[in-house]
Image (tube, helix red, strand yellow):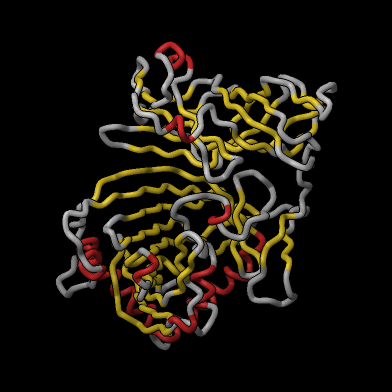
Length: 459
């Protein structure tokens, strides 16, 4: 909001402070140079640090009563007049770090980074480049055309506002829909504190997404603050929000919060594969020991039981669930026990989704990660073996157990009461899907949940 002449005394004082700060310099151009220096200083030091990231995601379905152009949808969205309903929510937890100009992600407390962007870890709407990518493009290169816009007031603070635009031929900003990727120009604004030359907020909006992308526009808003670590302070995002408006009127909204920022330990350096001196390289891994895999014969079926409850109100994708092996795993000749019954197993929640509405449900996607053998954590390669197959899932005759959970299993009521959930097939065979129908927020999955798996590997 622009500051008018009829401002209260406090706002007037803030404006005087702002004008004094600009008067001590050569104006907006000098202020911009100071901002660049502050941002590039942060970018130079970022490879030493990593932060925890919590992402709250919401999907809003459209009510296609009438078709609108992207211009019409964008206008309605800005006015809050889109006719949508909340269709799905979930939460993710990740760790994010930066090295050699690229952001890399891992699951929390995994102590290694072997994925270069969040798209390879999780499904659904995610974003890369928020930690450093936008800062590098806008302030660390000549890609952006920046102009001074004037004063703005944010939460009682008088700030200097700039606007920018990055043309398509200099843009590295892309929108991905499945396997397709669309690079687009982008524009936006950023606000800075004229007294400290600190970046306070940054807003980015895509320009000219093609119709085949399935989206009208994307927008990202970031709030920044200075973090103090080890007698040093530098700029980091405090939170960000990603908004995607699709051309069918549906929307995605992601709110990400950065916390628990810390410095890499001496024995946890990041290694990158690729040509030396490249602007962007593909990350390999944090140099820590990876759990060895078990040499198990293929096709050995086994059962896993979770030994702790899952509070679906607070649990997130990225959380680890403790479990035990309910059956032994034998060798190829089925004589010797390779993995004994009762062995501790670590399983990770890949996604935990809530579907509100008149027929609510909760879906949890789980992957097995490791098993403890002789006090050593070893990687466990297995694929899900759901209790039913796709044909059984499509059978009608919905059956509902006492308490509200209903599934279509084609089973007699007594059997259904013993198994009040659905094991669905997933595009990734290493993921087991549990679905709880009729359950609302606050539902807790009790300890004792069982699932069936089968070993994979070399013959």
